[in-house]
Length: 223
Image 1: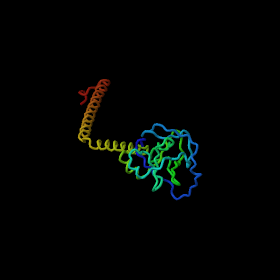
Image 2: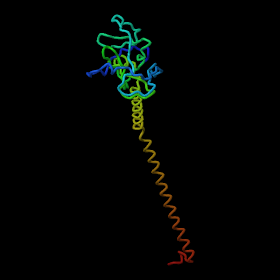
Image 3: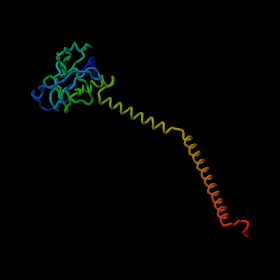
Image 4: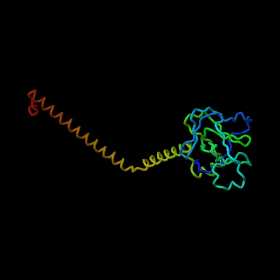
């Protein structure tokens, strides 16, 4: 997601598990904001283990009358009645992009939002989480999601379509051209066989004449 796009985040992965605030202590992991395929993104500068907290999405509480303001680009719903605007300098997490195959998730106890790793993340990987079905259907589906998973699926579809088109082209090729080729091949083969037969017959006559000459016999002398 580009930095200029509206971000109506949704919490996922909280479930029914009981959590303690110790679980959500942000670890001292090195992250950086850099260029991504969709604008700015957040990247890991070191290997990060699974199921740890790497950042908190922070912001100011937005009043209900402010929600119609299109200039608010980093809104995150933390509860049914509370939404925060993450467009503040200390909120690095606002640059984390969406992915349909994310390596993190957002969890939110007590009206706060924490970014938790779903798996081990390698140094250099971009940090991503799923923005939620509602946001995906309303925004990303229309614009065209550019996450790695969706781009791979589109590439596979193009490749499959090219193969089907090639197979259809071969199936629709004129059959008469192949028939003419087979007929010409048969004609050449028949002509070759006749020439070989004539050559063998000529060799037989010549051999007989040579044998008659060596024995001093002639075909006319024998009665």
